[in-house]
Length: 315
Ligand SMILES: O=C(O)CCC(=O)C(=O)O
Ligand SMILES: [Fe+2]
Image (cartoon, rainbow, N blue to C red; front, side):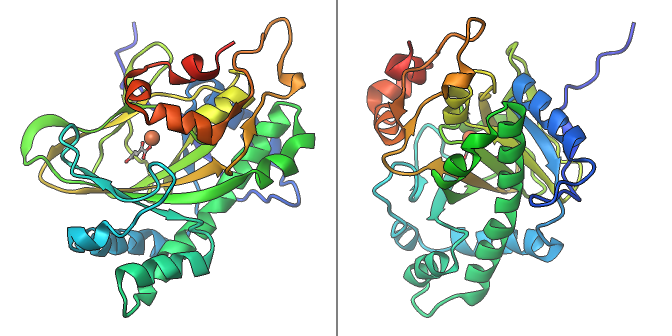
């Protein structure tokens, strides 16, 4: 009998792939990606296109950002739910986060920076922008691989054009105890694809389909977690899993993390293409307006609903 091993997320090397000209290893990596996303809804990606300097710099930038006075951080507002400052919640007292819409567009990052630092903060703008912009390549590779795997390449352009990028940045205070405390409650992401990155403090846990928690330990400094959100789960008519995950904290050190979220644009209707529906895969969700769904999800009723998508648009 083999001894019990700690469950791990699948680890996939996404270096040396090219979006335009297909690299020799494209097909092999594609099958690994698809399998991981069907089974786990996520995987650990090794991706060295984001320069080491930027990967290191991002955490200095986050420290500088979260060290701003609360009144300044509260200037980070958005009409979209969960795109602005979030923090000081009694249920998750360790957690604080902020959002930068279109973080891959330099002018957008600069105007957000200038709002927080009226005299400007070029190193912050540059780091946030480079990090986000370089990381969009990973999102695009993964989404191309997904659509090819689903034999739905003809939707690739429409699919890519239907999303924007949001960079959310997170700080979790160390609870100052060896007891484990909740950093961020169990949830699944609502967007298309999420790419997570973190400093040396662990805490992310992902639930397997059979309900076990996997604690994520990055293998390399160029490791990112790629995760499917509910809208791609719905679009693929349930083929891709969107996993529950949470953050658990212990110890003294603060955890800083980032999430690059590809998000359906306003007015976008999520509809599984007809190719996704057959006898074996009956339609799971009626076409739905992503923003309308978010309004339900973030309502009091939606927040208590473990199956918000099924309630909102289940067939
Ligand atoms: O901090 C993390 O690693 C996870 C954050 C997360 O799950 C989210 O923002 O949706
Ligand atoms: Fe999440």
